[in-house]
Structure formats: structure tokens, C-alpha cells
Length: 350
Image (cartoon, rainbow, N blue to C red; front, side):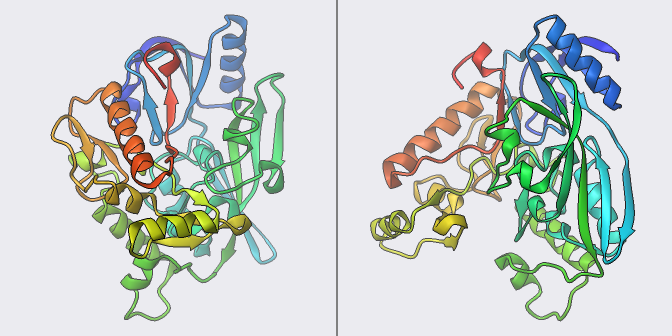
């Protein structure tokens, strides 16, 4: 294990903001991860596990403890009957992984193309987009138990996946470090075309291939600045900043009555209704391109707060708070942020 000191974190995030890590470890093996966790415990250092840095806001004060960058790579596939298994290290690039599954003509994650970050981050938030989520395909997650250094495998059921959540970011937050994820996909399966933008894209096509769907998803994401492109300031973000709220049907009806026009709504688990966070934000007065300073809203995607150049974490939090308060004032709905906030207890408000 190579321990480094005072490493800038901003370059390791898609937002490009934040202060340094007091200590930093780039872990390429499970043993590296174990050693880093042991070092942090022995020296009573707060531990933060960093993946691809794509869903993260680091405070201007940085992180006073140890940042562990999990960089375990490798993608391997095997077959068992009509199922194809893909084993991927937590540090493997997510879009590279998706490309590999599509290349092998296996369905299940093609609609998750173009999402930045690493494989290890996907089960934590149950990453999803365009009609798919990783919970639909994960067989098990190999993890390190921080408390005792034991490595175990958690089944899909044990991960308790729900909309944008799992035990890793709820009940067992901070208890495990993801080392590897096993996916089970469908060879020669049909692509998922459920999302409105995809249906529109293929309106005049019949039976698109998995590769065509992957390319369409990446094209749609690019049009919304949700695909990382060098030189595009609208991509300097953490992706969608707010989750789509899940509310009772009566609450959705209240919002619709208040708006005097149809509200985008979708059936969700447990009889709840998923509302469009983008619609709520827009109708509260925050249009695409909002803001004139170093931080604002993407010109292509209402839910993306962007660093236009020179923004600080404080700037981002200020705009976040402004949007949340206005949505509460307008609709009586509190929007929950998607990104992870790191180091704010050490600096200004979280």
C-alpha cells in the first residue's frame, strides 16, 4: 500500500471542485483495500471510499482523513445455461463494462450506457436510467466488512435494492466497501425500449440491436450534456442533482391541482407515484441555463448543476439550497439530492 499526503480531490471528480485529502491510497488489489482500512482504524482517521468521482461534491475544506480510491480492475465473463455472468472489479470503468456486455450481445444494462463512474458505485445507489437499473441484473456484490476486515458476498436480496438506494447508502452506510460485482445478463436478449426518448428515437425502426440502443442512449445523454465530453462546461457536474420524488397518489393529485395542468408522473413501487424532479424545478422558475456566475444550471438538462469554471463547493451548495427552498415554497415538496457530500461537517453546512 502506497500512502500519499495532501492529494487534490477536485481533479478526481466530474464536478472539479473540492479541497485535498489529508491522506490518500490508490488501491489496485483487495489487499491494498484491507491495508488502507486497517491504517485508517489504527490512526483513528475518518475514511472515505472514492470511486469514479461522478456523483460527488467535495467540500472546499477537503477531507481531513484518508480517501481510499478503489481501483480494482478487470472484467471477466462466463456462461451457465442460458445466463451469461460478468464479473467486474469495483474500479472498472462502468461504460467500458457496458460496452463489453453489448459486444458480447448480452441484454440487461444497455440502457445504462454513458453513465460516468465505476462499477463499484452502481450497486450503492442502484444506478438506473432509461427503463433499467442495476438491481435487475446484479447476482451478488463482493464486499469488505470495515469492522473486521472480512470479505463476504451479499446476494441481490441482501442488498435490499430500491429506487436509488441499497443497504450501502441507507441502513449499512459506511459498513462495507464494494470490491467486485457479479452481473447475470441475457445472451441474445431483446433490448429495453421503455423510456419515452428511446421510443421516439426508434419510432420508425423495427427490432433495434443492443448496439443501436447503446448508441441511441449515448446520443440522448450527449444532447442533455449527461455524457462526459472534453471541453463541454455543461458536463462539469455530478449528473442529475436531485432524485425524482416518490409520493402517495393523493400527494401527486394535490400537485396537479395546484399546477392546473398535467404533471409528469409514473407508477412506482409500493403504490407510490414518481414525480419528475426536472418538471418541479422548471416550474419553480429554474430554467435551463439559469445563473450567470461560476455555477448554474446546465443549458441542456434542468437537473444538472454545473461548474462553469472556477466554482467552489460553497457556490454549488448555495444554488442547491436555493432550488430546494423554492421547490418547497412552490410545491411543498422537498427534493433529495443524489450526490454524496464529502467533508462538509469539517467546513460549512451540509
